[in-house]
Length: 152
Image 1: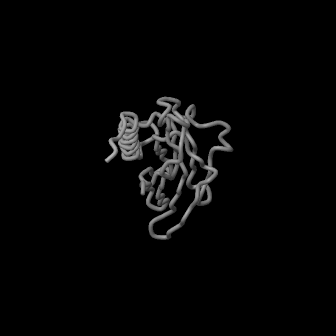
Image 2: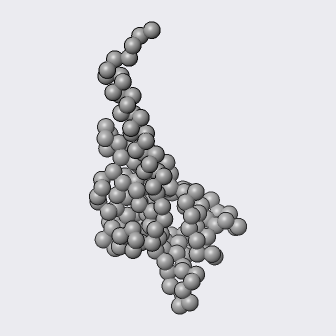
Image 3: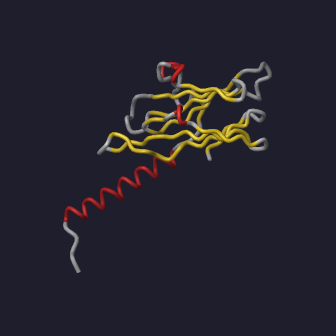
């Protein structure tokens, strides 16, 4: 039996640590109000027209956002949808932040009359060797009629 070299053991340990780190990051993604996520106009990626999309006749607005720090996981999306609890017809702003970048231009959609619109947004995650690598897509289920958003 060939004994693993110290370098190989360190490489394996590093890979394991990276896998645990990325798993923790993926698990940490959550939907927050834009206020709680500290997302405002200054976090929108400019030019906004190139980094935003609308769906359902303008009832769903999706924006790419970047909080700058921490570099590993400062990007995400802000979503503006009607606030069903607001009697005056206002909107609610929700945010999901925790990836290196999002590719809104590659977003795909699937509409389900019962569940709502599924937005699948490709992401990139921090990778020390290459700055970023493909990550798990953000999958957001948006039900405009109920005013709900869920991660899938």
